[in-house]
Image (cartoon, rainbow, N blue to C red; front, side):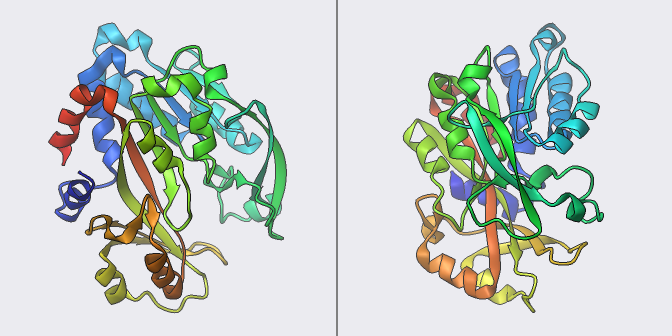
Length: 307
């Protein structure tokens, strides 16, 4: 199924990302059983806006009253921007919190306000907050944020959970606790160059894990992109994002046209990592669509209609 998903991109049957196609289809099929979404790492609210458009366009009128989106964003500047966009207290629950495996405080690293204000990063740090691992650089600063377990903060189990937490996905999944077996679909960011275990954890807990399109960035001093070498690995490029500020990497988007041979579990094998690092690739990430097999009779027919 993983290879079939990649082939759907390779044959131009899918554009954008797989969840863009699946979310409306699942909402139309499951209706009131698929109308509570969680947006973990909600940034400045763009994703939350998109989720509401899906719910409003795909739910039958009789089910629209149950539509809810719970949005979690711990960074002050992001939360302010998000609150302006998601100004509908009936549909949105906005929480200025990080999500993790414990109700506690934690340290986040964000670009310095001086750096962020120069126009390169835009208003709000959005995707640039990440957990402090002790390697803070001079152009970043550390802030303390409050974290919460989703199981303790949510009144009802969500149907769909999106987690874009720059490495904190596994702890957030653990924070779902007893709710996890009843979550139908998770959409999580995963770093293929690191030994992250969120995908492995979900696979061991009854989820089918599919990799979506990927993106990767090269070091700013990399002089060239060896397209032929990438092609030999089965890495296909469909677009590039050119840097708009000094020190920002060239970001490349694409898909994989090979199956599991590049992977050791749910990250690249040591051999593949070595080749990619020699090329000058700084990071390599994808989003994983994680489907709860308890609901396979409802969800897998939708997936097959996509791929």
